[in-house]
Length: 378
Image 1 (cartoon, rainbow, N blue to C red):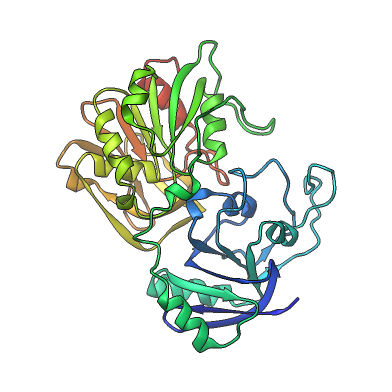
Image 2: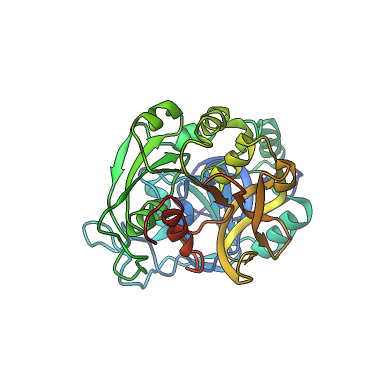
């Protein structure tokens, strides 16, 4: 393995060893507190534009497989940072379609993703927590700190980019696959309801959970006109998760405005933020975001505390919506808004990832709620 350098935009330098592909990559550096699920994280389209740091010290021990990816095609995270990479996967599921053992390092190499290991990820996490997420660069061939610092500071950043257009489906497609045998089914109904999913970077597990909940799922590209969905008489619309700043996805905001009051809507993560903007509200950026599978969220309607999966940098300012919605969920780490429901219309949304890919299953009931909201038997 070769030397690798990681330089943050504020000049902080970490030296480690490269694994995965060789090369150079720039992205917004964030940390994820999940202990497992690195394959799902790397394939989550919400990480487009970002370099992910895992806080769990040992990564790679169970390898990767063809079943756990949360999207098709190339991996979505820009780069990967770990304390210690384990290059000897021991899980029986660590195999490709040919049955050959598949390691995380080879997975990154196949997808041309640069990784760095051997750095103090605890120090990096503390630095990001104290100073906020920022742009960074990883290189396995340029070891001039001045050169790397110039490159990362010359990058425009990702806040003004429309990253959704880079991860959304190119054409409409149907989805009918449920969860794997070891996942909990939420009860498929005999007569499915037809739901359109705006693909802002949708995770496969969201589609699986919808299928398990008794929906016939049609996934549409992010820029599909609202009129087209209304003409097809869908029973409901889901605004999916996705990457980046919601304010840059102006076409999604405008389409959502046209859907409000005409069809039941459920928003997840970026979809939640787009929904808030479509109703005239405001969003704000968190200091270092929420990324992990262990975030406690209180359901204000039941009083239950749910452990949730999270991946977002922005939140909806519910107060800016002027009483149109009521707050339904609150993050117990920092008190930020995690869910809302319209006081009149069949519209609700959550900031966390209820499909839990990866993560706990505490929020599975939300897919039942969506079905119940549009008139189905939950």
